[in-house]
Amino acid sequence: MDLLANIFLKKEIEQLVLFFMVGGINTLFGYSLYALFLYFGLHYTLASLFSTIGGVLFNFKTTGIIVFKNHNNKLLLKFIGVYAITYLLNIGCLRIFDIVNVNMYLAGAIVLIPVALIAYTLQKRFVFGGNEGEINKRSNSLL
Image 1 (cartoon, rainbow, N blue to C red):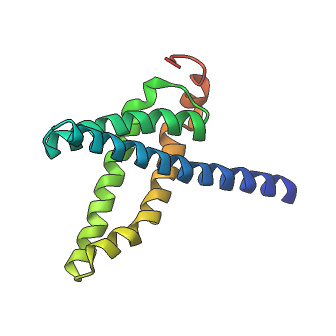
Image 2 (cartoon, rainbow, N blue to C red; image 1 turned 180 degrees about the vertical axis):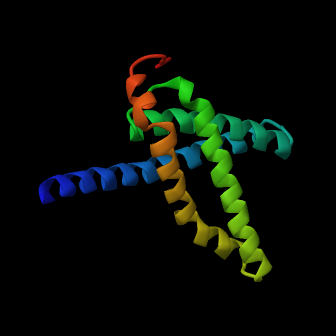
């Protein structure tokens, strides 16, 4: 039993590390889009909008394929839902820190890892995990 638990734990840790690595790539991609749009003269509001849309789509594919080994494009709405939930959670946490006068740079750093862990858990359980994700893993794919 301990061997199975250790194998499961090792796989879970490897997947979580991969999630954070892919998250770094996704962040770099999203920021690069933002900078590119600014370079070509878009207003920062449009640059932010388009880079966010592009970043979410890129993140959906990289997280789904690389981290969770899932190509199912029908999961995009669930993925966006998890993004919305983690965004609201992040804003709520930052608001609490703001009320108690914590520096917002420090507050952002403090909530970064816990919110990322929650995002990982929600994506694993409600987006890419479960029967729907497994059954449709090889179907409905553009890639």
